[in-house]
Amino acid sequence: MLKTIEAQVLKQSAPVALKAEFAQDDFERLHGFCVLIYMASISIWLLFVLIVSVRGGQGFTVYSMIFLVALLIISITLGFTRNARHFQWINLVFVLVITLGVRLVIEGLPMDLHPGWLILAASSILYSASVLPLNRWSFFGATLLTWVVLNPFFMTNTSVFELKGTMVFFYGVFLTALTLYTFLKLRQAKLHNYIMSKLLLDQAYVDALTDIPNRRSFMAAANNQLEHGPRQRDHYLAMIDVDNFKKVNDLYGHDIGDEVLKRVAAAIKTVMADFEYARLGGEEFGVYLSGVRREDVETLAANLCRVVRDEPTGHPVTISMGLARVEEHDTLNLALIKADRALYESKHTGKDRYTFYQ
Image (cartoon, rainbow, N blue to C red; front, side):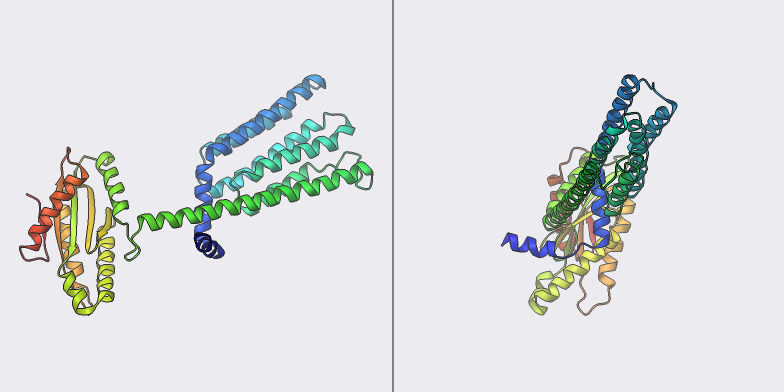
């Protein structure tokens, strides 16, 4: 059954926005790996430059220094880059510069060695590109640049019609097809894993009915605010309950009850947009307000009650709220108990109001 559900989910094409979100997430996760690949590529290139310079008797030329500085500048730029789209262009520039640098090194070798070393260099660059978090167009561009600059038939006295040239040509075709297939399958697998992970997280931490965070999500977020949130101002916890909700279900049915819960959730999402909120279960909702003043909490609570009360609908409802100031030594469970007691006061003193825990 799980395989069937997974197949149904993955059969749907991912929206453009989701693909862009995946590309950014993939780049952020592999940012350090990208820098490592760049530095390793520079180190290997520099090693061969030194070998050719010393053993070939050419010396370390000015051109080699220029290429080294350019590659280091690109790598440093990547270190400060946090946008996946910018990385695509940076990678194309890096591929262009390092392929030109590799071509410069290979020119210092005997002519009969050029085709083999050009193929070896191209395979290394294409393999490195295939494991980087690149978009399709960026990988295709890197592949095209690699073969244009490291063309084993350009300035090598090697013809594609010769035995050696024919073998080099077909090996190049095989290499390109293999890296392209590897890149596309790896990217597809990572995209599928991202979609499934996002779906599982949504199911685990988002309430299916109201489409706002659920109790599990709220407890994690509120605990984080409690432990790490700013303490220049106070923290408050609000418990919200729909008044006479059982009567709504009994009179109009559960479908109307669900619509009421969705409306209340939408109102909370609008009024409390800057804070952590969630459906805690049934008709109960919670809000954790960090870094606020008491008068601000009063304004928000009154506004939320008004929005729910005045919403034009055939089945109007009201809400009651309990508010508790979260002290420095309070745990989240203790704050929830205080807010629940304040909610009890609101329920038993007229409803459609908010009460602070005394």
